[in-house]
Length: 139
Ligand code: TYD
Image (cartoon, rainbow, N blue to C red):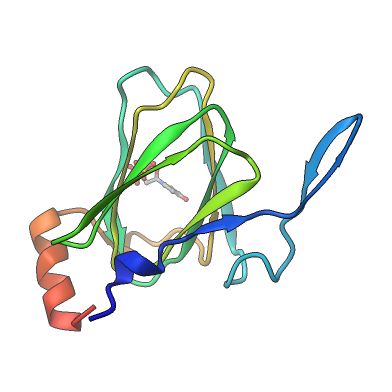
């Protein structure tokens, strides 16, 4: 069975490099959704963790613009830990995946491109509810 967790992939962001530095470009073919919202996490205290929820519909693309952090993805059975530490790579997170963000380095900035505006009804913030949702939807 194909699991939603396998749809969460690292995507290379095209960049132009020259002696002045790098310029990374996200145009519409880079991520498989239209961006409706951009937000970012910064000034994250050492030892702090973020996330701890899943989305029913929302798709997101995470980039470590600066520094590094770990993303832990859970589908209720399988768990994956992905370190983001390169502004030219992003992580696509598809719906139906629980995510936790931790191990933020000093100065880390996490940019999030999202497929929709903020909607609390799209969140699942309880892991047991998340597992029931996965069973119900068979995803
Ligand atoms: P939260 O979901 O706890 O953030 P994270 O996923 O990074 O741990 O969100 C913190 C608060 O911010 C919460 O009250 C919801 C609110 N919020 C918005 O109002 N708009 C947004 O786009 C986001 C992502 C959160």
